Image 1: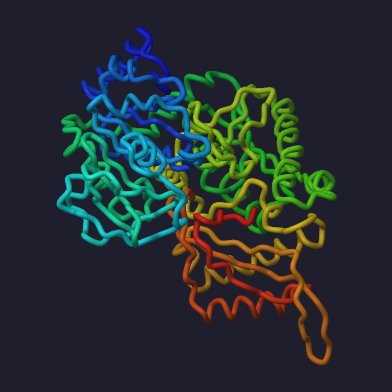
Image 2: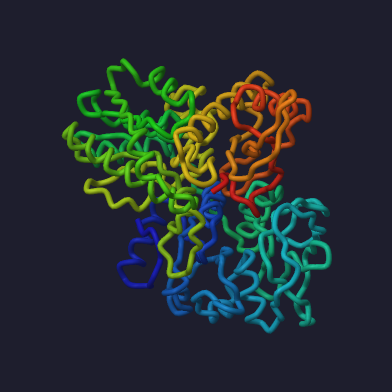
Length: 531
């Protein structure tokens, strides 16, 4: 199977034909990955429709390659580049091949500029907006006249060519358009905030490109287990086990692929974790006959490497100086030959990785579990999944629901929920605050209604009064979001009485607090975690 189409060599074309035979289809769609953080969601949208989508490298694939492959449709993702200052590598002759093209955000701007439209810096649009759409157009068939869409761009497209047809607007800006074989949307149909997104992909594939074949969804969990069993054989595996949904799902995949605790060890690293993480690990993975559990207390090692570090990026990098060697020490102690992690595609994408493509991709943040350069081969069976896709696999193989519904927690842990230097006192404060927050969310029946929640100890100070005394203390910011996959998120509208009660508990029970605030930012613009 070919992962990325780079050149129409005989070998590549033969591999694609073999994949088509498996899928019983003669149809293929090309997805040019231009560096968007959401490009894998486009790939997943095509998979949900049952069509064969193949990622293409915009830096290497030419119009001649496309002509040899003969795709029935082409999709261009968004990306961090600009058509003005750094147009991404792409053979614009592809637009002239009469093959239907769907350009998303940057992809739309690229073909718009190619046909002579003006693309210029305009009103920056980030977050959820309301679009008025022409739902008579085949691209918007079965959509509403007014749709909620997610925008994430700073350039806008003019309408200064007569043959260009505007299909949707957001305010005074073009939100979608059509010219000949070229279709485009300025918003992102691949994210859940765009309510009609999957319908748009279905319309493009089946109404515009006239696709006829739908491949039945495979038993993904079974495929992953068989692949792991083939890779591992009789060798030992060490699993980085956090007690969250991702590593728990990988644990259960490995349970099915290995023969017991003599072959599988899980390592939990204590130090920058949540108050109840270790409790969950002991509850579900301690005293089991299929996994050997080891707890490593690395608190002092984390504090040592984090001393003097104040920036979020340098703290993320510093904690890896403990995470990596601890795992490698445990691999050697167990005599294992593989390190397994619950790494998601989200982690890889935000760290600047993803589909193999010559387009630039933004490095949003360094994740603890990517590009570590282990001395041992890695197993990352969820690296092609986003959060809820991994949870679906977990449910299929019997991972306890209590593990699957746990809120995501960053690999660097409380390190990114403390501004400035990490001290034992700040670490204890952050852990106590997190415990109170989660306890109150559960008590109010809100824990499973929000996707993720957290508390940040900021560097800001605020004057406080206590009886007849006064002083200054840290400003504490708590937040909660609704999301599906972590690529995008909406600030959760927590009840005011809940927030007041929480602020009261924080102030009464945690020493050193001057004020409590709530964050209302969505993603984009903000990331979910503070840093």
